[in-house]
Length: 117
Length: 115
Image 1 (cartoon, chains in turn blue, yellow):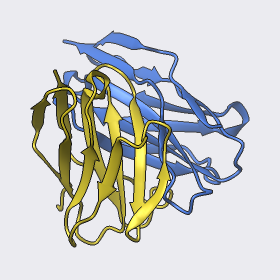
Image 2 (cartoon, helix red, strand yellow):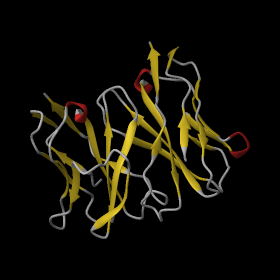
Image 3 (cartoon, rainbow over the protein chains, first blue to last red):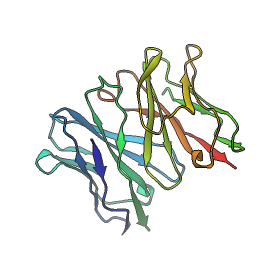
Image 4 (tube, each protein chain N blue to C red):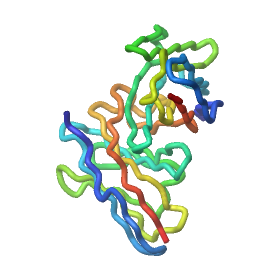
């Protein structure tokens, strides 16, 4: 069975600090997909990134970066120079490939990130 | 940019009543999903739908739940006899190729309150 663990329930930092959100996953499949979603206070779910299990290259998008390490089953998310607008709940999610694309995503419990001015 | 549209944004219903949540997925997408999020908790998969039938469903999706694509644009979730514990935000999502190959596009959700 697949599982996603986000051990940090809540993180509070001061604006401009860097912050890393941890995500550890479990799966028996060799082919799987990892995602990060952002849920701002308004409640919608905003896609941030998708990674497949064969691509361990780290990715950077502006102030956001992701570190995927299969050896430790982790897919961590770092925000550099955080801003108040980054305040949200961030979810890590996993999808296995067996269902040909129709598999449900397994979400972690989310990390509530608070950026204080 | 095309969006997934959900109506209503908030639905209040009495326990035991039937409720239908509506979604209009992005027009060229082929895979459709329902997820729910109980307040303050994680997002949970309910069901996926492809080629006019259910592809996968979770343990949450019991006989009280059903989905339908009544026409070429709408995708509905019906809860036959609502319970208090069905109170949650329900998210519809769609994707063109299946979520392993392309990310889910979520709607803004319908907040269901069962009293």
